[in-house]
Length: 143
Image (cartoon, rainbow, N blue to C red):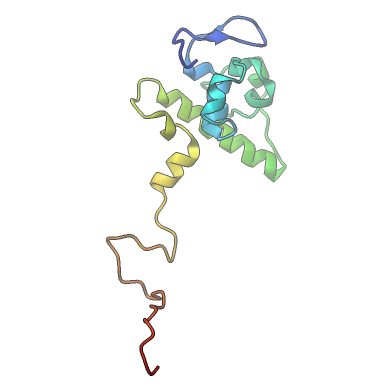
């Protein structure tokens, strides 16, 4: 969709992907599976036309032939994939008109900005590190 705001043709059905909220390419970008540069080079498709993505969206607002039967993933890896793809799809629905910069679209950008600092991380506001790095002294004569 970049460069042409009316969309690109879906590689599966041939119709226009007219909105970011139905774009499989942008969903993959939000998931972190496609880089910013690839948005200009990868083929576009409707989310509903890509069963590899559509089957993992567990949201009643998403309608697709793939979603006709709700899948309850028993495998932990598949369940995590479903949770991540569903979260990315919901994020994609919020992006249109949000005014966010494109680098803030991916889920990882959200988790980085919302996550508390990791233990041991110090910021300029908290200089009192319990384990400061050793300082090097300049050698002096006689030492």
